[in-house]
Structure formats: structure tokens, C-alpha cells
Amino acid sequence: MVSPLSALVVMGVSGCGKSSVGAAIVQHSGGRLIEGDSFHPKANIEKMSAGIPLDDNDRAGWLTRLGEELNACVKGGERAVLTCSALKRAYRDKLRAAVPDLGFVFLELSRAEAADRVSHRPGHFMPASLIDSQFATLESPTGEDRTLTVDATRPIDALAVQVDGWLVGHGAKTLA
Image (cartoon, rainbow, N blue to C red; front, side, top):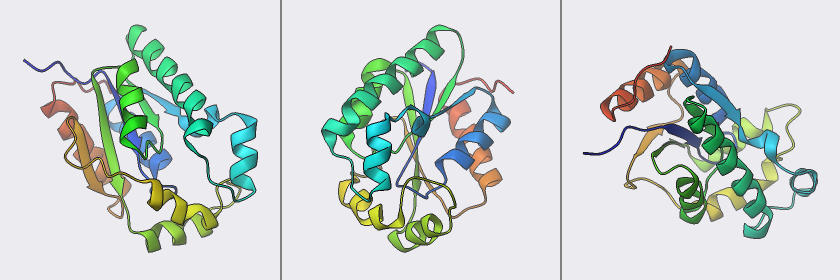
């Protein structure tokens, strides 16, 4: 028997709607939202703000910290809903090592749509000039175990309902 999902990562390239969809999932299904961007060290934010893409070394400590936060949430009896790009399989595996019963929701979006969304997002440190690097880094999780791929252009509420049905199908209880 497969164990139920204990936590969830809402993932995808910049501009796909991770924060909005993560918040909608928490509102619809319950849990605690963990905004992955708020855990970036200052050096990472400065690098991205300058239009320089992060590399594996830049992300390593950040991913470790996110894994610790997920684990603490699960051990505390909460379902975490983490927003995190998780662009590479190795990044997702690092998070899975912290929380083995982890599910992923991949917000799939075209390069053009991502660039358009990011260019209209005020006050965020991630410039539209880094969209190409996001897609170059992305290793699609479609087909990975415990991963749901959704069309990020669908209405946010519809995505939350879709994710809730998927969670219930994977043995998770709706908490809201």
C-alpha cells in the first residue's frame, strides 16, 4: 500500500503562478503555505535581481533549508504546501529525501506566457530576462511518481479543485 501524501510542492518556472495556486490549494484543501522565495539567501536574491541565473551551488543551501522546513511542518502534524521552482530532478529528489511522502504539482506553462506574466509582475526580484534560463534548466517532472501536471493557464480556483481531487485520490485528507 502506498502511503498518503504528507506534503506538497507547487513547482514550475518563474511566472507560472506557484504562489497564487499554492495559496488557493491551502484555502481549498488546508495546510500551511511555505513561500519558497522567502527562504532565498540575500546573495541569491542579489544575483537574480542582477539578471544572473542561479546555479546548482546557489540552490543547494536553499533546497536544504526548504527540506528542513517541510520536514518540521510534517513532524508537527501539518500538511505543508511549498512553492518552489524545483526545476531539476535532483532538486526534487533532495526535497523527497527530506519528506519521502512528498507530492508535486507541476504548473506547466509556455515560455511566451511565462515571459509575459513575469514582465507584468511588479516588485519581484526575478526579471523576465531570466525566463530562458528557467526553461533551459527545467527537467519536466511529468511522469514522475506522485506528480500531477496541470495547465497553469487554467483558472486558479479550478486548479485548486483539481489538486484537491488528486490529493484525495492519493490518500490525503482534506484539511479545510
